[in-house]
Length: 431
Figure 1 (cartoon, rainbow, N blue to C red):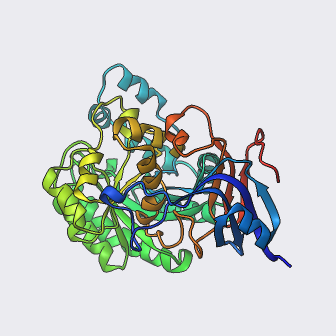
Figure 2 (cartoon, one colour):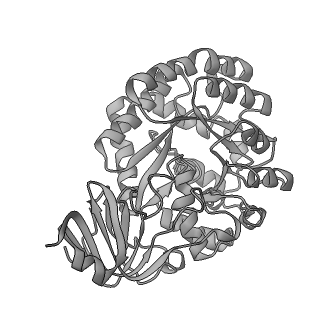
Figure 3 (cartoon, helix red, strand yellow):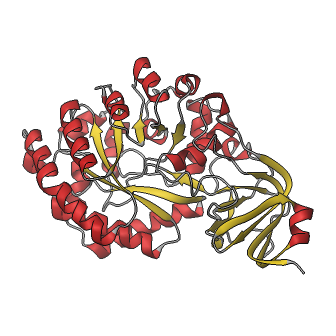
């Protein structure tokens, strides 16, 4: 008699398990280790992987309440998007037109646009509006293969409005199949009411916002809550960044930092010093700080959608990070100003062309390493016995296609915790 499982996926042409490396992310020359199995099958029960192996072996051993015939296609772990600004109201399409005409990101910010523009629209939106505008973006992420997504606040920039964004994220997490990793980003920009008084706003974050966020967490969010700061010219300087992060760490919050998007202020070294889980953007990170990241447990997260969205030619020096032995991940940076992109497949395509990753490296950076960038590498990001049954059946025969092709969604079936969460209407997968 066969063992009963909730889900059996069989007839997999190529299965990429993308294993962790020594219980952590893949580093240096090990990045791109795919754990590839040909003619494979995978069994999931009660939301977790219980067996991986040859197609013949697992089909003889298991019977699934739900069975998926992959018909020779590629299967990978569910993608992980470790840096998004998912929740906002409105759009900034007119600013995109201004950039195309030659205005810089900094010029638009100085004229009252940029982040502050979205803050104004987001503050005016109620909870239902925020949920209804954000939900389609989260659904698009899932449909393109992302099963775990980091979500930041940062378009409220006042205590009540930041709490409203936390409530929105918590509601989305409870209602949607995608698992959300949550980040408080009150230090995203200096709000208009504090123009010329950035230190005063930092005081507000430390004295009022963080205590309120910690109180909210105790009631609404049992898991890890991150604190992030945008350490950049025109946002927060190094001293302000340190003050906020040290205060957040004192409350037991995990740390992330936006660093070196346009120029280096020393934020990457500070992040390493404080034990941040990740440093994100890393476009202008100097060599000595790259080496410091590589010698630490901090994951470097590149966001190639952002320079692409800005029409820039300078991207993160990913090969320098890899050669130094750093753990590199990639993310969409989905946001209304510079990178309205919900599609991690496109991020992999950009990463092979502009970060000079191989297709295998890009896949690992979008799965196992991205999972460690949100502190969930022990649960998601790879297909290993005991981990969550998050996987994607792709409409391609081999992993190279995920970076080689772009412009069409290649995900046919997305499985979250062993249950079908998305099924493309054109999918030929046999249920």
